[in-house]
Amino acid sequence: MSTTGSIAELAPTFTGQLLQPSDAGYDDARRVHNGLIDKRPALVARCFGTADVADAVKLARTLKLEVAVRGGGHNVAGRATIDGGVMIDLAPMKGIYVDPAGRTARAQGGVLWKELNREAQAHGLATTGGVVGTTGIAGLTLGGGLGWLMPKYGLALDNLRSAELVMADGRIVRASQDENADLFWAIRGGGGNFGIAASLEYNLHPVGPIITGGLAAHPLQRGADVLKFFRDSCAAAPDELMLVAGLLSAPDGSGAKLVGIVPAHCGPLADGEKAVAPIKAFGPPVMDMLGPIPYCAQNGLLDAAFPRGALNYWKAQFLKDLSDDAIATLVERFAACPSPMSQIVIEHFHGKASRVPVADTACAMRVNGFNVVIISEWTDARENDQHIAWCRDTYTALKPFLAATRYVNYLGSDEEDDPAAVAYGVNYARLQELKTKYDPDNFFHINVNIRPR
Image (cartoon, rainbow, N blue to C red; front, side, top):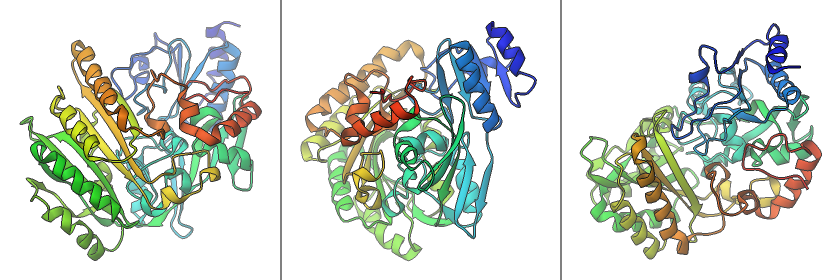
């Protein structure tokens, strides 16, 4: 059967849209957040429900086409799209149901964190979600899920209660602790290797609606002192306090380079005030936005720095330690940064997210320490080589300080080694066994791929 014939046969029952390159709306639908990614699928299946997702999988199998899955489309490496294959697009799937009495939420796979946060915060509840509100819940959760609440409540995947998955053969299954438990273990960290998460159910926790957070920033000239203070602050941080540092340019357009500290304290406001008091006093900062802030606003603090369509190239890895020499290298490399949109972000991991035993979930990122993210971002495609080179050169300069641990969701498309083997460590062998069980043909491979045995 021809491609056109197969699509025409499915179209009358497909609730969403089946867009081919000649169709209106195709060009916008094929685009993902990162403007550096410019791929042209043979078909974009814009799904409105789980049955659409299942039918899209079956259609791709009939057509013998590769599949990429888009949730929020935020993945910088561009794994949400594909040339010449089928993009199964969950972006229209926006259903959210919050159970305030049971403190749970179920949301469809196209929901963004800012959307889930808004619904949950209407009841004074939240779960760990991305530090950028425009990130999709599905991709972030399945790959790990860092966020402002992770020291207190664990990673996003630690709060996952169940997921409705469309498997490689089009079957619809539920994965939880008591149903397909081995699959549930695998998807909590295994990314999109095992199925498409059509919906996800989370545990929620009392948070906000006002927490303590914001930003304090200093001139880059004081960067070494600020990052040493940040390091010391992290060593004493309670579970309620998440701390992130960033080397960034001033938001006023002046181009001034800054070093900022972004805290988020999810406990009582009085405790939060005490926790951020030393950050307010240090320096003092040239920019002080610290204080009570809506939890949703905290989650949106960084959104404007990541506009849809901007060109992005990232590298990321954990540090052995935020040593004085590592700090000096970070400051030196950011001083040479050519784009005011680029940043270097240092995320501190501690608390509950780091205390979960490595064997409990597929995610092997159970460490106390610092993850450094080199974010090169710009808008003029003529400058691609320059900005990619700065990111790569910065990563090379940091190599003496890098640990083995890596976050799946930050892995690029041009990694030198087998990124899955590195990221999953001791869990990789079991993941390969489960990949063989649930997706022996490696149908889902446009991801940080776990190859079947």
